[in-house]
Amino acid sequence: MPNAPLDLAAYVARVGYRGPLTHSLETLVGLHRAQAFRIPFENLDIHLNRPIGLEPASLVQKLVHEQRGGYCYEANGLFRLVLQELGFAVTCLVGRNLLAGPPLRPRAHQVLLVEVEGQPWLADLGFGANGLIEPIPLEAGPEHQQFFDRYRLQAAPQHNYHLQLQMQGQWQSLYTFTLDEAQPSDFQMMNFYYSQAPDSPFRKQRITTLATPDGRISLIDRELKIRRADGSTSTTPVTSDAAYEQTLATHFGIRLPAALPI
Image (cartoon, rainbow, N blue to C red; front, top):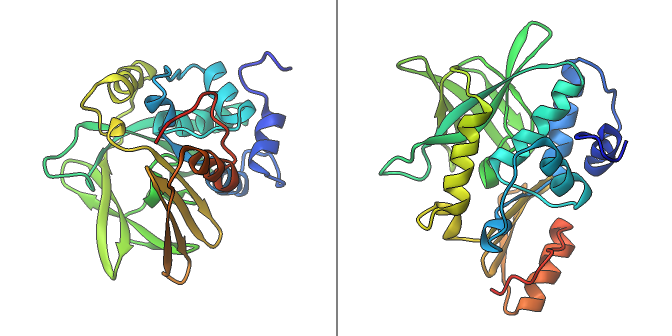
């Protein structure tokens, strides 16, 4: 059904998933991991001055059929569609980025709460270079090793949770969130600001980043950085528009609809 908002078979092929498609924890974890390794976090349409649509058809067209990436409203919006198609109960939540302050940013980061096998799980495929590879149970305290990174949830006052990442031996809070449900109209307003406002942080840098089983690949403006599981990194300057386009295609599978001079 090429005109359907969600073509599940096309999505599965896009992320390279080969496991069961059932209402199960195995499916939730497997799909989350597969999307994390195949669909980059990127904000390039903002720099192309192209509108970012959050309607199901727009998400599927861009991230699945055009083989692009997206930022949190797109990546988690698509994952929500997939999970709901498979019968999962999914609640949208809003988090506050704690890495960017002070001053603190508004609450504007979309995350997902997924109920499966009687347990709520935090799913998030849209936090860029520090994001989860797999969902984690909504339980404060336990640590979760995910390939090259270790995460945990910490309880905070006023019914908040902090998602934390171990960085250089110290726990760093990535973002905080509550369990208050957000509505699609909330994200439409957030998306409009972050994609259109001149002072949006996403207009300051061109970001493309993708997790791999061996580390992470990031292209930030003119710099390609490869982080390996052993902690080593390499940085390569990208010195021309042609090299930028080739880097996007080679490392992220992205071919832009228009030139994006660097």
